[in-house]
Length: 124
Image 1 (spheres, rainbow, N blue to C red):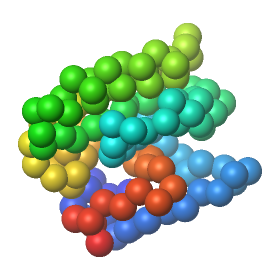
Image 2: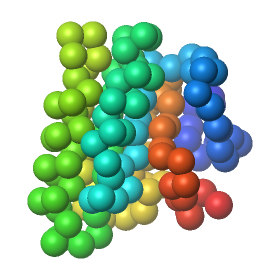
Image 3: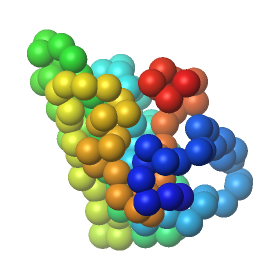
């Protein structure tokens, strides 16, 4: 990956079950909806635990009414995912786009994770 997220030419990366993850230091998991199932936490743990990767759950809200629901969801996902070898943090962005949100938290070595069928329109 390049030094800047904006310079990245990778628009998508599909990793199917049983395939190894690319080298990464942290998984940045995009939580796009207050209806995100808690099963996501177990799937993320399955990706992170064997490699002892850090995890960051990220959500974006543009409506004040969603803030509390998303904050509780992030805390719950983090609690289910965290263990002695998988540190987990959360980030709730209250304005902007997904691209701005990811740029605010992205560091070299991060692998962006989203759910099957999730689309981030700003990236095409």
